[in-house]
Length: 600
Image 1 (cartoon, rainbow, N blue to C red):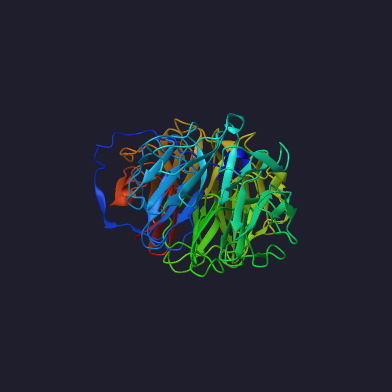
Image 2 (image 1 turned 90 degrees about the vertical axis):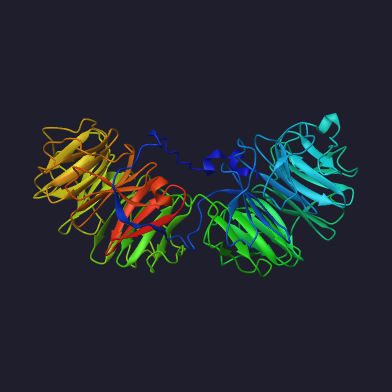
């Protein structure tokens, strides 16, 4: 599925660049205890650009993380063995027991063992970028991005290429019935009546993008992006708008189960069982689920989205997230609201768990997809600060979210939030602001840190301490005025800040730094974590915790002077982006594998 490559603005990709320490170095003493994964039902945040369901296996191709397979109906997933340089898998298809995958860098791959292992086909289409496949009889057609439509009748041993005039056609999707082949392209809808050798444009113009086509019995369906859903009842010769239209005509995929046609859009999945006269938005999926890929085998369906994989066992009537997402449960932030754990995933919103991570739900009300930076509890509510969308509030432990009235300083970039008594203090890209009415109105600090984005706010005794991109600042009048700390950390770009009384730990671009005098002076720990790349910080009681880029979580019980690895196992190898504490439990949000928890 090529739509996301066509509009790169649709994706916000976070890249963690690490500093790799020697993997052979011992992590040092390890605190007793073990981490367990707490991600059941947590929707994935991976982007799934192709899916395939057969009577034996499910396959899911991603935009950057390769190919995954499930042999138990989507309950569990494993990575398929493909050439090492395969990242994007935009197309999947099947010819009997032989499976095909179109890739971004290895051409067309073929598998004869239900998708466990893959190798390039004996010969390759002239352009190695197949976006879609369709089988008609013994002919497998491949829609090629920049290579037209190619056909094989011998499982890829040889390929028939289109006539030279059509050999460079940008094809996003293909479907066929008999000798008639319909292609959705970067310039409208094309049709071939001789098995893909010669082509003619039958609808649209050079600028009309067609990402989706399908055929149900004798009726072809296609969509021109944003212009409407079309159908043809004369073998694709002419096209008319369907009598009714989905609520969103930005259609990325069309598929069918029996006589029901499904249209996957940016806004969700629509269905029509009356030939396109009426369309219904599926209510079992999260609101605004961007549906990119869809496949059915009988009543079993698999849906690929920007929020992970969903499956259906009733012909697409109801959908649920697969129990364990195959990849990219990328947690950007984790926090708590009362007894509920909250986790924000890339491209997937803020999930909530009222069962200590045993099960997760994605409420329809969301504060947007901007990255949450911090939170503060206030009179039964929880407020979160974000980068790009200001401050949001929930009054029911994450079930519903609302934006606060006026954003501090009209700045939508808020890096830190702190409750001091009944006063909210917000550190933004426009300075420091204070609110005494739950964030409805804000007053600027008299002497704020000048032109410095703030990434951390804590109380240290009677002072407030702020970590900014230009060092440490302190306030002794509840955030009204600020002065730079007399002695700064060796690296002054502070990314996060936590405190126990007057002992502070700062995460900087140069690693950890600590202060034992309320942020006035700073020094590096005597025994820092063995992974110097620190991603997150948290506090519980008298203990500091830090999440690292490749060695899990470390703890310090002596004010940040020395650090030891916390627990062992899989988490000890993962990047931990975010940490949160609830009574008796430490939660870790990872960059790829969802939420983990550790008993305290």
